[in-house]
Image 1 (cartoon, helix red, strand yellow):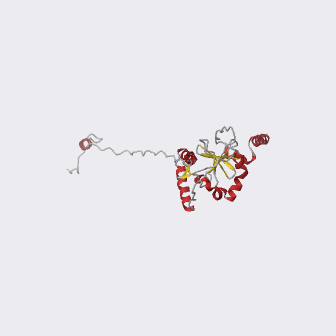
Image 2: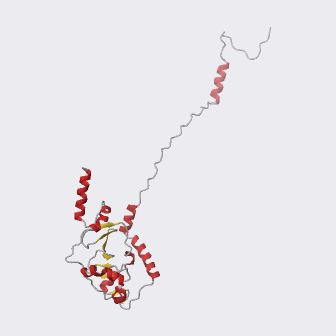
Image 3: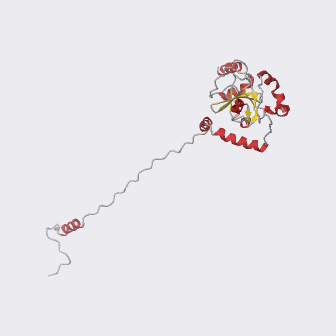
Length: 241
């Protein structure tokens, strides 16, 4: 009976979720999934400069990225990924490696069309064009060679400077309230050892000290007692007559 129920459950899950996300389905049990985003049409993306070909959806307030053939989403301090931009999210138990290359101010640069003081003529890429060409663009380093990321007078950062920025952004990410709250939940609770109740030491009764005057009177009374024959006892030795 149990095997039959497990088979039915597995068949239902495989019907609802696509195969590439099955690896995340098992991990997502017990973890809430992000709410769905309603798109009237497949979203356009832009490529973010100084990254390993990370694309972002610029017209929404949600962090939604495309990288390495997957859609990535950050929600409540957790990461999720899917092969679809609007469904099939599965929990990803790590921070994707591309994220620390993303400049946190990229939305402001997008609105101002200015990337770090340089004019940014970004190109809006339709979803179909992205799906057909993302791998070819990455292999041929298309955006650096032909378009320079769309940034006028673009100069790539030295590798050492990029690594320093990655470390700095990682520290900033770990200081976010939702990320810190999640890290605290993951830490194992250390159980304090129970304290054994201490037994009270019983106080030993101390010998009572009698009043010296009372002791003297008791001794005097004993010395004045009569012997069994009714005659008082004499001290010392009797003289012979």
